[in-house]
Image (cartoon, rainbow, N blue to C red; front, top):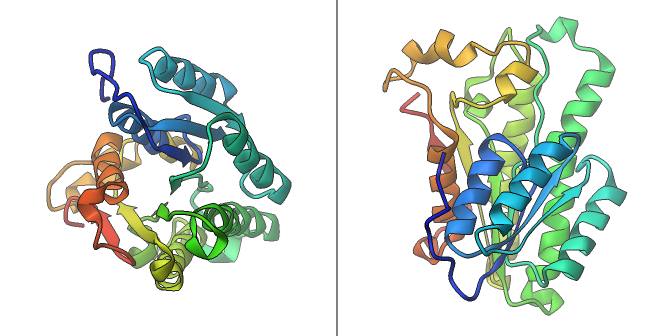
Length: 259
């Protein structure tokens, strides 16, 4: 985990909204954004203690940070999330579309309708809603100065995850397509849109899918023979948010250890 306690925070900052920012990859992105002086809005669906605790941690280092409860699958929550960011922090410069869910491993012939609805509402529709609100604020077409969107995909999008969660894989494949299409749509409006596609990463999402030891079980399939860390994914996200990637849009960056 990146430590920010001893880092001097820049006097001025951009504003980033990180959905699902209280834990895992989202929290790692938030800590790294704080190192770079961003003002940060974290959204969370249920774990208020984790998100609010992280916001307090970041605030103690000198950056502005807030945590806002919002289910990205609910349009009213997304509107409130962005309006709260506008009111408390200011005009948005960057969005990290990180919020997502995974369900317990099942074959497709065991999927329920409710599972599929929840999966695609959260992972796909939620990402579209957040991207829509970001574009409305950032695009020169709407009077904005531009900005950056980074979507979180998954290596499952190209591996398929057969016998585990094909629905999750399909939802992340939709994120890849959304990234490429939206990038072309808003490239001339000052907005860059890219995605990061993590592989086997040590985060809590595996436990929520019913298999907390999944990384250890599968890491021998990774050419680097280990799982990745949330910070390693956040490194890629922060590069795509930065001016160092100023000529990069419509790209999907694998952070998979070669898998």
